Amino acid sequence: MTTRLSEVAAFAGVSEVTVRRVASGSSVVAPATRDKVLRAFDVLGLERPAAGRTERAPLVGLVVPELQNPVFPAFTEALAGRLNKQGLIPVLCTRTADGSSEAHYIQRLLGQNIGGIVFVGSSYADAGPEQSRALRDRRTPLVLINAADENRGPAQVSADDAQAAEQALTHLTALGHERIGLVAGPIGHVPSARKLAGYAAFWRARGVPPEEWHGWVAHTMFSMEGGATAVPQLTARGVTAVVCASDALALG
Image (cartoon, rainbow, N blue to C red; front, side, top):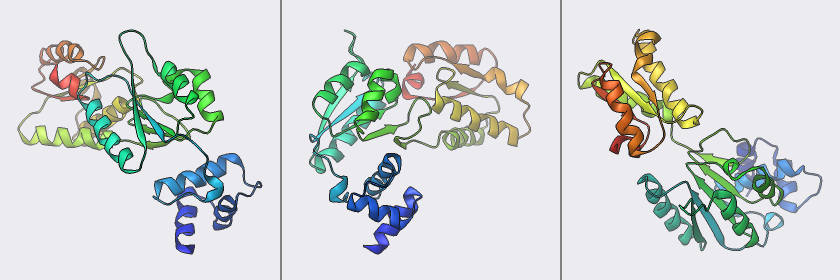
């Protein structure tokens, strides 16, 4: 048990004494520190101490922006399978044509004393300040997967976007391409910004000046229409291969 406590302490960036206090339910630990330690238990796959458990419904919301992009159903299927194995019930929440939004779903989920929420490809901040505040006040467990913007606090899982871009460029260069474009999401979208950083680093390492590759980059909405519009613009500038920031863009 001592070894596990040391692992939790190292992951949370606190002392073992603090971990023991959280485990015993001590009131001298700041709420933010307590949450950090409990999240460390979760990430390391350890059972939370009895003092850190709460009576929540075994429901976990899966919030995805849409189901047209094939990556989101794939994430949903994988997450639902893992949750079921843990005895939890996944609840799918996605934007719909009739106007159902993240804010609407979060309000409904909170009314069921939800056990946690996983946001895929978006952010709990998209729900609006009122719902975001309610999630924080209730200390609802959150996980963000490939979050669309920077978020401090919630646990996050994301791809190494910069490395992914460099791997794709290395592959295309090996095939003989010298003018390779990048079709990224809207400006301000964090994963796209990271891909662009990797793209820039790739050309910088090869001595290609920014003024040359700047024209090979296009920002657009994540849709097939966005990809179909962006690629002809890049090929008109002499691009012979393209790295796309999403499946929907590539399909377009």
